[in-house]
Length: 386
Image (cartoon, rainbow, N blue to C red):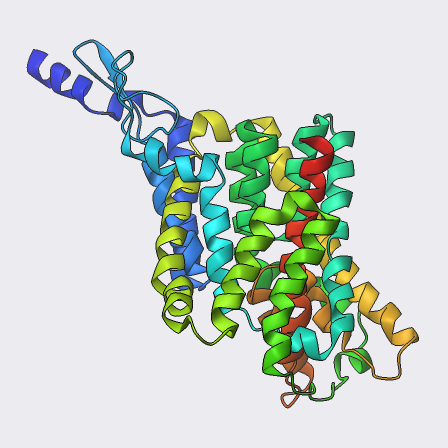
């Protein structure tokens, strides 16, 4: 019996709390949704694995508690050694991973749809209403201004931007903010369609948009350069994210760095995505995640996402009042920067009314504008609250 008791002390069984078990269940649910429902599997599977890693209970060896996976604790108290996850999480805490993801996303992005109809940039800007409305809501709930700013960026539906800003303004809230941002990104096909249908009539959903005019090679090369200069002039705090985003796009469009562009949009961004998912998931330990503040952040995140979607749709309807070339209001929902899922949702909802109505290429315009808009919103909040 003494040996059995000693063995149990070496395991984590006696140290597991109900919180650890609950977070393990959440991690398994994330993995289930990714595999069964195909909700952003490239994000939810690594995050789910990270949640399981982050909730390994401590065990006691030699009279010292050992934390195998917790990101902010020493492996053995007083030893000066840290877990592997501590070092992997460094890229999240310092904002390195978000910038690298933006580089890869830029190398994937085609600005042709936005350049062919520049007015669609206003739909991406309109969706940022969700960011600033959430900021106000967080202040009303008692969060400090810098915390409210970090929470507000969830409304941009951009996980890397949420990580970047929260690591600067409110590192203590990074785990719930990042999990909320990525969760709502994965649930785009669930959250957006009811809002889109509620705010549009069948006649509006049946609007067919004209094919976009062609865009020259020179325009594609000049846009990332000019876009970066404009964005950083308006919001200098966005320079890191927009610089990587437009820089990655220039690699793609210049025509002389195909190998770099291919690497940036494939293996490079995949590696960083794995590291981000594991690190963010591991940060969601029961002791830091299961708090009333975290629950409020999740509630505010859902509200901000709904407001951002509604703002994009409503602004598209307003634009139609002053334009002869009508816009299908469904593409306004793509103004949130969940690329390319929100654009796909616009296509999906549109084809439920008309199978021949192809909105995807039109929705990509406000979608990429939303990426730029969320990065600029983060820069503005950093400048005001940092």
